[in-house]
Length: 497
Image 1 (tube, one colour):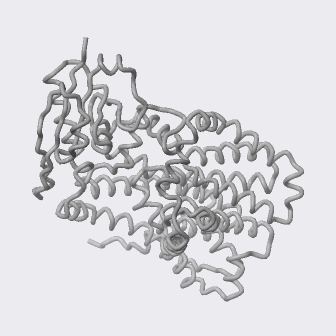
Image 2: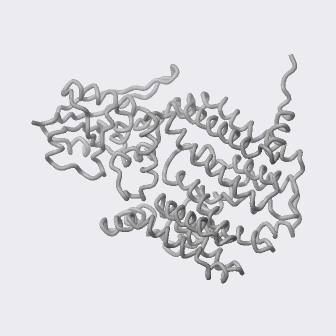
Image 3: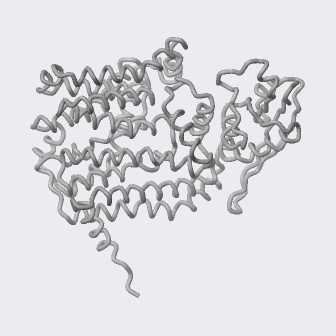
């Protein structure tokens, strides 16, 4: 039997993706396959380690939906909406996580149509698929991941608004700019960068004399106003958290983190850059045109790309704040346009065929490797708070059911353990640790479970003396690979009259 020719299949797919008659539909199918393959990879590769603490924390926040936490509320609101539709399960959470970069890829595809010809437009999206932010790192859904589609959309509508002064685009730019700030305050660098790009552009007078920028500001202010009010009412608590965790560092530590941010960010996108340089072999003039283009439209794009990427370095040095390259994951939507839009950069048809083949091969190879990765993680011992969370939740619920037929409504104790139990528990309880507290009367009527590591004397000491106490050893085996036992102390405070 004749085996299929991968390169011939890649050529057919490449032709379908540049064909005006069906390329939009074909790209949607490709992105759907991308979404499903990386979701399957995450579900299998991470099956021995459970959900990351960032992900279970967001589930906790979504049960007590508010206008703010230690971060703004967008990620928690999305989790709340998602799990009102889908079951709380690892596969569905990874599906949500991968929906973020996949949506960003779709926006990048639409945005590239304004600046690149069809083959380069295709190559740009394929290059982004080779950036780890759009697959491996995106599987951990958190306040960084959630920014990817919203930064992309804000950038897209800003550029459209600037070019056309269309009030619809201006309003959408304001909505998505505010949404970015509701995702993470890091987005201030996007907003500052887009303002700087507008001011740098020689057409700025026409733009600022139009209604477009003021519609953007007005709509954005209306969208973000409830969160600003929440900040005033809570003494700007997220800022205090950010300073406590990342701020007030000496110049040497800050400078080292800035260098790490810049070097790490460059390393994450090294593959697309190397591919373009190797395939196109641009002259020094073309490389200069990549960095700072000659024509106004592309220079605006370059400014909108470089400023949000570089402003964090200046901000960190000025404020003594440590930053990390992972936080740049939302800043790469415009990279394909910067790399490929110069006239001196040309790609052959064979180059795009090879890119298609590689972009298809990477998730397939990752999917094949996923079981091996899961077993290897098990051998090295994943963190018990995440790996054993589902088993601990089952044990807590078993003990609770022995005490009362009423649903488990509250869980306290160690914050990561409580978050994990709340995520996996059938009753979907709320978490007490680090969250708004119910009234004393409600807590007494509902009762609660408290979960601690057995060796954590501080956590155990905070439990009421009248609580029922159980020591429980939990061991999670995975595909016949033995895990490491962990002892937990579980307190059951039964509901009162």
